[in-house]
Length: 83
Image (cartoon, rainbow, N blue to C red; front, side):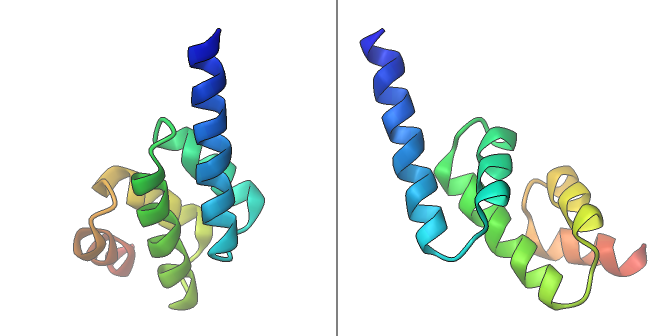
């Protein structure tokens, strides 16, 4: 039980840090789940999601492509442009 508590506190800390970077709560929770609670991968995903969103791509397409491409920016961008 102590281990679960530590994992939960770690999760809360990671979410808090990502929220402070300006990401929306729903997106932070979704990203953390998608990447098995890896703060680093979730942060990469959220950063790229925001970047591609600013370029005018649709969020659902961005999410799909980023997952398929494993957060590889160039590969994801290429996929988005050719869609």
